[in-house]
Amino acid sequence: MDLHVISQFLGRIALAQGGVICLPLLMALLFGEECWPAFTETIAACALTGSAFLRWGRVRTKKLTMREGIAITGLGWLLATFLGMLPYCLSGYLNYFDGTFESISGFTGTGATVIPDLEILPQSLLFWRSLTHWLGGLGIVVIFLAILPEAGQSTVYLYNAESTGPTRERVLPRLRDMVRVLFRMYLAFTVIAFVIFLLCGMDILGALNHAISTVSAGGFSTYNSSAAHFESPAVEGWMTFFMVLTGGNYGLYYQTWQKGWHILWHNTEFKAYLAILAAATVLIGLNLMDGFDVTAPTALRYSSFQAASIATTGFVSADYDRWPPFSKGILMLLMISGGCAGSTAAGLKISRIVIITRYLWQAAKVKLHPHQVWGLSINGRHISDDTVIRAAQYCFLYLMFIALWALLLTFDGINTFDAIGISVSTMGCIGPAFGITGATCTYADLSVFAKSILCLSMLLGRLEIFTILVMFRKSFWKSKNSW
Image (cartoon, rainbow, N blue to C red; front, side, top):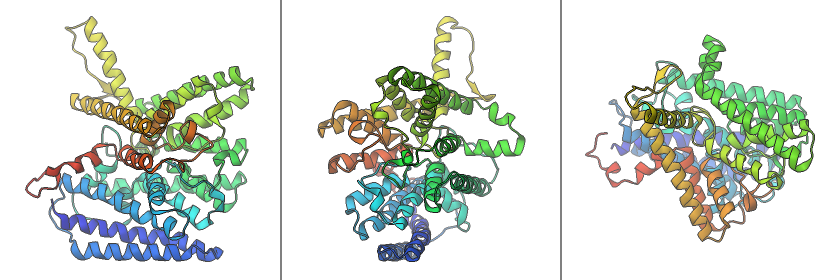
């Protein structure tokens, strides 16, 4: 473990974050908002922190190890979180603990907020809040690799530690080329969403904030009532489209751009993803028509938006806490499943669900035909036993952590169903849950104990558990290990 090279990377991340914070500072100065000193002080803190890390660090010529890649990613997220909470705290709107919660929620794309009234915040602070989504959506380290100069050899370990899903497919042979392609697509989707939201009647700042939050699968809104504020089928329809889009695999989109639409329609994970959303939309719509006697178009409007949102982003267009239990049960399952591997959405990932489902089906067939040789394949590619085992391990750990967080939350006095919903929502980086943290509520009234648990839950969910867990091993930090 070379702590000097880790320090070098962390220094660059801190300086890059200070540069990004110049954007909300300029907005605050332009609008004459009183919170501008908070951004100035934050930029100074980023500069001092980055300079200190760079002074002690160095870039070496030999390859990074896997441990260094994991350490840079894990510590980079923590550093970005603590620097990112400063504007909330220095401006006086949140204390340091709540600021840390809001920052973690932003960077992880969770969208859980502890701010009771968003509409009293300055526009620049709301913009920074949404911007944390955008930085964390594609990945702090991935964006760092895309926009900064050459960071050294074997940065593949940085990418692998932050990317999501059971496999690490490359759409281009060189990692830096691939990362830059993903970044350009991410930026293009954001710009397109911004323009469309403007055409739907949003003001410039509203369109910018919601485009950033939608494409990053975050869910932070500038209004207390979230997407329901607009009361516009056009806005909800386009938001639904972009939420579904951002829940897909960005690498798959690039392959589709290069080779044609048949790549998209022959991808097993993407077809399963659309099928799950379609089934959830139809079932919830029928349940709403039966339970509330609403028309089919109205039921489809709310069910399609909320199904896409709960699986990916966390925006709210209706108070789904008042929906029938069956609909709420489907929404909870969508929180668990999440989006595709290689997307900005979190959750278990559809690819893992497909792998485990096919493996279990295959195991059942083996019982009937014990002497026949079976092979598991997806998209025409053989899935190794090692990949199946890793997927099963992750699913087991994911569900066990949900159970653990729920148990700890009930110890804090939260009722069982609400505790399960909060645990599922934060592990899936969704944000709104049910009951006390439902569609019309915030996380502000939770205790410090509960918020502490949920901060860890959000980080584990976004970085897919192992990146954080391995850093708690004492042997991980010993210099004599070379892995």
